[in-house]
Length: 151
Image 1 (spheres, rainbow, N blue to C red):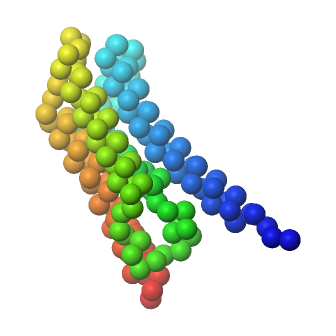
Image 2: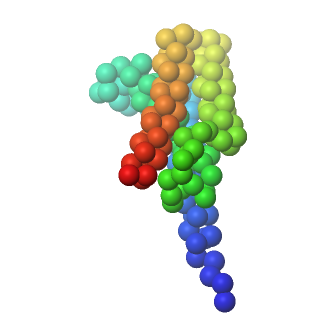
């Protein structure tokens, strides 16, 4: 009788990775909405101050978003082993990175139309830099993993 435990484990790992991506995406979106509607904005501004300012917070969240987008879109077959070309991004990863970039841009550009917020090209650039920095960190880890697994 054939066991399904390997498939179930892979499916659970995939769902955890996707949930992490959406958790980061939703947390960033909710923080932006909270500032827009002046809900917990003092708390969010306190966090911004603790990490070094709003630009630093944008960088940190977007970097985590880039890493989680790549990880969530990774082929489940490649999760448990290092392969020669695992650093090549797949279609799902590009889709999640693209979705992130579009939603980040939409969020920042909509602030132009909200009286309590202001559009900032610096915030948008910090988000884009953070997103692609996260992708580069992910690729660097994949390359290192591939290199060290071969000996």
